[in-house]
Amino acid sequence: DVIREWFGLNQLEHQLEKQLGLNKVIVVAGNSLTQPWVKNDLGRSAVQQLKQWAEPNSVVSVAGGTTMEAVAQAMTPHPVLRTLLYVPARGGLGEKVEYQANTICSEMASRSGGQYRLLHVPDQLSKEAYASLLEDEQIKELIRIIRSARIVVHGIGEANTMATRRKASPQMLAKLKERQAVAEAFGYYFDRDGNIVYKIQTVGLRLEDIKQADHIIAVAGGEDKAEAILAFLKHGVHDCLITDEGAARQMLQYI
Ligand code: F6P
Image (cartoon, rainbow, N blue to C red; front, side):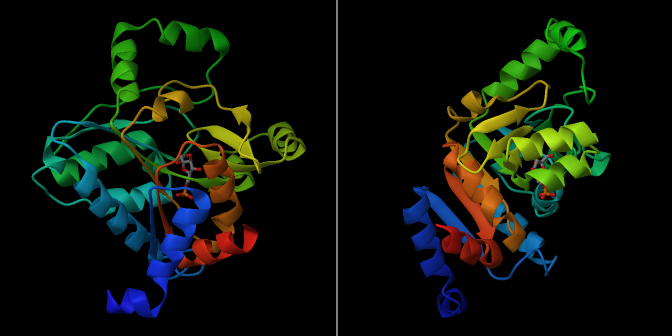
């Protein structure tokens, strides 16, 4: 705590809580853009927060990405975490297997001793395939569980980075640019004001479901994500942000 005081991290947290209207902000030292190990600290902080908020037997819905992978890595056996059901927030966003929400939720469950359910939905569904998938009883039941999650843990990405990582077509990249997308989370792309400008067609959590969760933990750091984090938070679905000093200081420059 003395070290946190020394680096002014507590002050950064309070400043961001006030300016962004968040219930809780946690800032870890460093900048994950240039110091990759900082992501592990983000992961550990997210797990600590989860331990504080988790109620026995609740459903936790988790997103994918490298930061969420760090969260999964930081999970340890724990009396309450062991009783949780981990589910992926949404299916089929075009990530590599190791960064898919399915992989991350199974890892979180196995490291903590909890249960998990997987959502098998291919990437890039046609409208027809999407509609028939929604008719499937097992998928319907799982989607109902996902939407009932009491806690949601997710990452935030920069729009162009995420579209490129998902191998978006040049047309799609042009569309995002034209619509001035700067942020991405849960398969939704947002402009600077937090408006949704594009939505990946898949199943699972919708932004309106997230609003009914008791706790929403966004985990995102790195100086390069500052604008994206601010844009996503402007959309209004927020509660707790776990970030690093690099992103925190940059965000304060923008607001
Ligand atoms: O694709 C899943 C996802 O959670 C996105 O919604 C988010 O933009 C991204 O991963 C964050 O990834 P990373 O933590 O690797 O920057």
